[in-house]
Length: 306
Ligand code: G3H
Ligand code: 13P
Ligand code: ZN
Image (cartoon, rainbow, N blue to C red; front, side, top):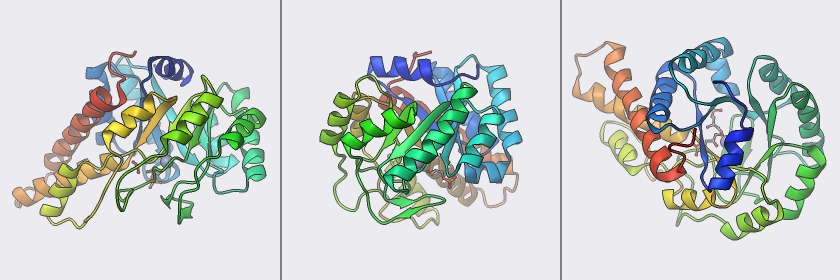
């Protein structure tokens, strides 16, 4: 059933595991993710960015999720990813989303608080969950380009949550969006994460930019005409560790893109006379399923958590 994140995150927090929040924008992606979660009996967050809403249109995404919910017996949240302003959050709340993210992370502290508070007031009135963000991730997002990481300050995090009433908080501890997360060695600031967790006991944290950029997909894409050299993600063991420290929601988009694109490149190259989209979108959907199933089972630890 369509569910808010409250119970999901409470159980995840207590169990030291995380829920996967996967970005969706078409049928194959939704079917791949849901099939994986179904086999693993895992709760799910399906998240939709502004770009995804624009690409697929909200009604199509909602109807696809509705179809998935009719076929499976999983708790699924539909979440707005990186809401840039009050209006898009309101639109999604009114449109039946179970949770929204208001991303004021690029704003000065007080402005981030004011904006988040405004969304919280509207959302809570309708029983909708609000994720906010404090600290800045390096990399490219739709509405913000940030040159460098600004890690979340633990004292500010406490004050931010108290003053805004937001339900979960995305923090910056060294992850970033996209396929190029680390130039040298991959590292996250676990000391900071531990401090934040200890200061905010029981409070659900969110980790964005958590794709692992599996090298098998990077190599597959590159050997079939792609050009994504030097791509690097967050090692899986670091994500597993983060899940033990109050990180209840782990966001993954890039790995879905890589899995689909690598397999589509390979399939097209190996079958040059094929032109039926189902012949390459089918294998791409299967690759999403296998990848997500591996994450649920071996990285997030949320198998059999429904
Ligand atoms: O945080 C960004 C997500 O990967 C969504 O990306 O805005 O290109 O849909 P998008
Ligand atoms: P990745 O780019 O690491 O997949 O992060 C996705 C994300 O944070 C979506 O909000
Ligand atoms: Zn993100």
